[in-house]
Length: 100
Image 1 (tube, one colour):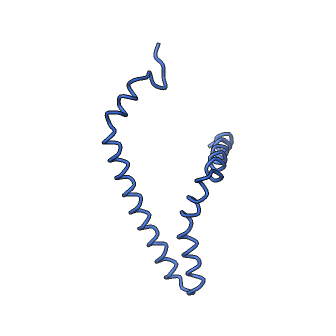
Image 2 (image 1 turned 120 degrees about the horizontal axis):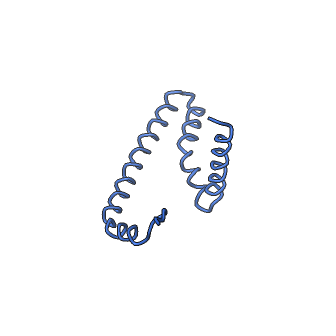
Image 3 (image 1 turned 90 degrees about the vertical axis):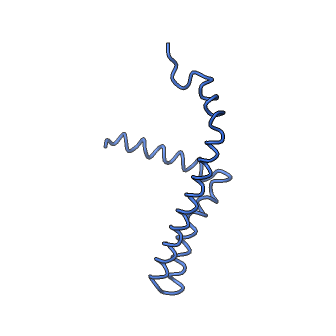
């Protein structure tokens, strides 16, 4: 990987972080996503047990997979219901590449 390539990746990541982190709805998403990690560290500190830490992180991972699965099922269902409308909108214009 070239130095230019890495600098471009870093620039894009910085722009996306600024755009989403400081948006009205962006900050609470990060807090919500990091909450199980903070909870696991807090429980490890309070109870003094590595097992508690691992159990909480495993529970959070399983919960994340379940939420992701439900969200994907919902998105697929919505796409299937709106399939005809989506295809009509896509076929209405020339698209991103114009042919001559």
